Image: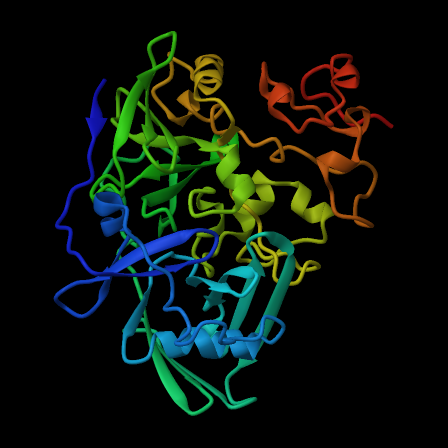
Length: 404
């Protein structure tokens, strides 16, 4: 069995900041922080420093100001680097009977706004959010777009954050005729990826940026029909290797990681915030119109703070079962993205809610298949949620219109 190993220099001494999961970071000689490498080499992490005295209350869970104050105090004197490309600065620390996971969200920093969101890892429904606007409540936000530098003044103390922009480059591979490059991105897992679009199949997909160092070891596997795939040792991301182009396409993310909302839950939440992708999203995901529409950047107009999730990969529980599925989905005879666009198919891509759909958000879990336009390609239907009404589905022809 072959493996691909991460490359690049690894330097010791680290600081942990995470949210959906833990992100090990270390300071390099330049004074900036390099991310995720020491975790791969040593598996050594530590959380934000514990209170000075046993039992000391360091923050109030019900007060976002208190949480923000604690995190910024921990960062005092450092230049904090925001690595993920959707501009979330993650943190994670114990607080009494809770374990806090959260982030400082800088997605709207151009407009003088940040937010703080966090939850208890052992009760994720217990969630708090605080929003801060430049010039109010003792907050001052200064953003130097050219330098990617943010100065945040809170309660008289200034913290500095640097946006990591290494992901925003053109792909080093040739594009197929008609194919579009949407953006590069850096996922919280440490993977650099390219978000691509294939108009003829209304398909979005992620391709590995292989000019960057891998964040983990990849292990090779082969499907029963001989397709080459690679699994991340820790992330369990699954990449299909296209033999003609050499591209590595993300085709699988482990369901367990999605359920745990950890740092390996897939790149759907790290798409850069101000991409002009509204027209592409409306074409690729028609249901967004039934959900009240989106703006030019993919944000829902009637769901405050919610953005379209671009998740074109299979959610799998068993790697062996994923290999069997990929055999049915990967097309051998195509020298175009059509080779993998069924493997990266999303069940929500072709759904329009029954009727006008505008009075409620669409949800497969709330509708029987008899009222669902069943884009049932082969085994796709079987990968839908457990409450999918298969008995109704089998009576419908593929791509048939909704039942009236």
